[in-house]
Length: 61
Image (cartoon, rainbow, N blue to C red):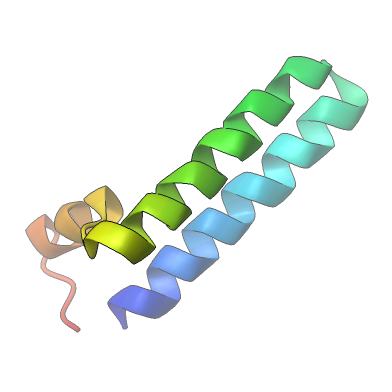
C-alpha cells in the first residue's frame, strides 16, 4: 500500500509542477528536478522520507 501511495504522490507532484511550469513560471521545473532526485536517491539508499511520514500516519505496507 505504501509503495502505491508514494508513487501516486510523486507522480502527482511531477505533473502538477510541469503544469505550473507551463502556465505560471518555468522555475517550477526545479521542483520537478527535486522530486526526481529524491526518487533517485531513495533507489540507492533505500530510504524515503514519504515512507516515514506514511508510517507515522499508520499506513501499513
